[in-house]
Image (cartoon, rainbow, N blue to C red):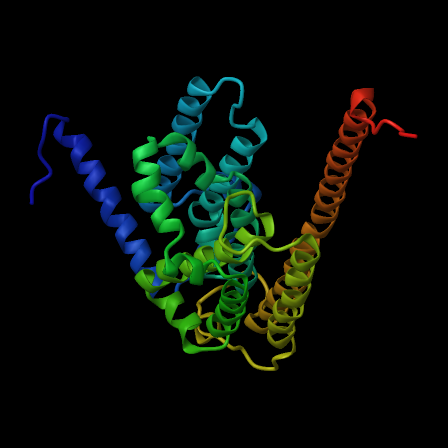
Length: 334
């Protein structure tokens, strides 16, 4: 196919040469050649030209902003809180950074960077997206007919109730962490770009399912109490810590991709693996621990609101009792 069109031929020729160079570089990386040694400027300015994460980010951010705008116009007295909008956009930005920045470029060269990428997809972006309460926004944005005929039946379906079950979500998250790190899938994903994208989607999906009942900003089939949520997180922490420690204490390189990579800079494959294990263990647990004070604060506020409502009901009852007409009292006889 010739490079012809309304743009001058020399520009098309330059474009085609650049595309061929990019394809050649991608092929070389896939066959064991590392990216250039990272620099501060290079890390800050390097972005992956893959259109998929950019398209996903634009669609997700645009839908939320447009839906929030429609809801705010229709219900100016009960607008979408700005902090929920900020949380959603931050979650979308986290996904974009994980999949389109230098993190994605060097994830194939350093296991440590790959661990950071997976933690962002599984433990940073999902709770931020959950705080955005997109299901609630969707229910407020659609017409009543669509809400009752389409959205609510889906939310109340057996499949959604099963998948949204905290037991299923907790178990799936643990299985994903263990299976992806201690099976041939991890190394295969490093060699196969399609499988790598699927792996990222699995981390993001399992993270969303895990964090949704913890944040509980949306209507969910199985709502846990605050104490149960704390236990839910606490029981998951040893699982992620065990994954990191198992990687750290391994005396051999677990993933052949990193062992055979022609990289002339940075730590050895084994040292890189040990640092990656520490990241998975330490940073992963810190991310989960960061949710604890937020849950405790929300728990205290919920108890305070409950106490205020209870006191208000009691005061109203006493006021009604005091205002009862005297004629209602029994008249003594005799």
